[in-house]
Image (cartoon, rainbow, N blue to C red; front, side, top):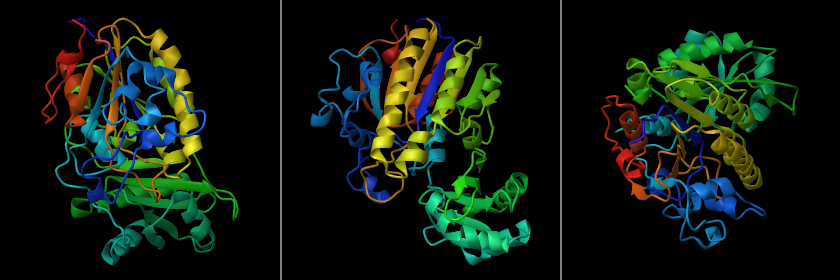
Length: 397
């Protein structure tokens, strides 16, 4: 087998490829994020197609994908089923890094209980308003004026395991909002250990409030992941975009945050090709989910995938002989499905590089954690995980 120097793992946040067998348990019916995009007029993704995106299980037999499928993909490809009990960003990324969550993180469809709200208000020193599941853009429209008049923070949640605090930057400076989130993070532990506490600053005047790029996630600290295994063994473990937030900074040797858009994330990832490191670059591109999926903007989502695909062409050309690229997702967020929440879906896995066997169809794999196990095997580090490495199956020899 060829020796690998760098692995680039890129997560296209929410690009699911069809309902998982247990989707109904999560309140989802028929859903397929990718096929919803394919149905969008003018959709094309030739570079992703060349790696095998439209050849994965559940997609290759879909009539809509026939024209996009290539006869001889140059990558290895698979469909991954999530083993963890969740359909959120934290659970999905942790499992990609090797951690299978046996129990779902807590969610609050009726809002947070009175004792939690009381504890939060006492710790933060401000009243809280709203306390319901809400769209992030709608909640500031509906509660922004009350927040500005009273100074109370807007607290809300979603179908995910999150507690979000929103505040106008002229009322509550960012650092004060971040400190409020740190205090909330301490309270939201144990049985109330939500995956993320999220600061959501906004600006503007009613009715034209706008969320800023000052979002910051305060995540639970994960158990040992492949990031820790790499760092402990002396390899680089680089996070791009939301990765540091998702893993609470744990296991990273370097973090390249983004301006919370795909363009900046892709620019930083491309720049890493010119750096000399040995290890993993773990990338999250969030626009697919945050900007388009939750807002059920099919055309915008399709356009974002096509923009990534155009960027990908140059990235593939610039890869070095000892590089491996993996592209996957962390859950679904079908813009063609009802509601605004994530969807419980399979996700694709595409792998490419000189060292990867072209056209290798891995079928359907039982766990996202197989990705973490594979990265651990590539670098020869020890990782305790339920995932099974597929490196020997796709290695070109």
